[in-house]
Image 1 (tube, rainbow, N blue to C red):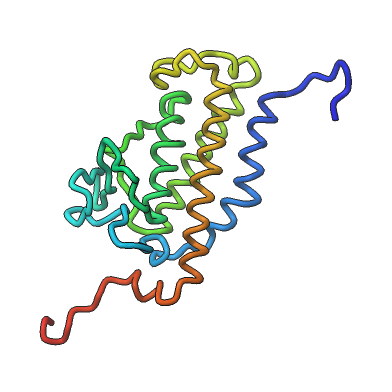
Image 2: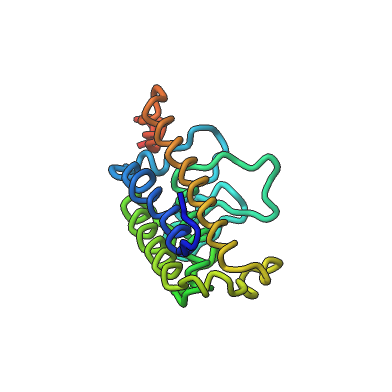
Length: 206
C-alpha cells in the first residue's frame, strides 16, 4: 500500500515484474534442458529449428548450420512449435531485436540469426539477450519510459517506451509458459524420448 506523497519508481516496478518472474519461475525451470527435449516434436508438422537443408517449411531461414521454420503470412491455424522454435522466437523476435533497436545491441533479425542447434547454445543466447534487454530497461530511468518508441516499432512508434516494456513483459511470460508446458508434456508423454531421436535406418539400409 502506498501513502499520500509517496513517489513511485515506475522503472523499478516494470523491471521487477519481469525480472522476478525470470529469476524465480522461468529461468530456473529451463535448467537441465536436454537436446532431445529442445528438438522434440509433439505432433506431426511442427515448426522447429533444423539443420540447414532439412527445413519443414518452404521459407526456413537463418544464417549458419541451423535454420528456423518460418513463413509469412503465418498459416491459420498456426503450427505447433517445438521448444527450439519457441526459444528462438523469444531470443530473436521478443528480446534480441528490441535490445538492438532501442539499446544499441548487435543487430538481431530472423533471416540472418545463427540459430542454436543445441539446448545449451539456445540457453546461452537467451541469457545474453535477456541481460541486454533488462539492463537497457533499467538504464531508461523514469524519464526514458515516457519517450516515444520510435520507428523501430512501426505503427506503435508514438507509444511510450513504458508500453513496449509492458508488451515485452507479457510476451516473455506468455511464450516462456508455452515453453515450460512443452517440457511438462515431454516428461509425461509415453515414448516421447524415443520419438525425439532420429530414426535408426533398418539393417538392410545400413
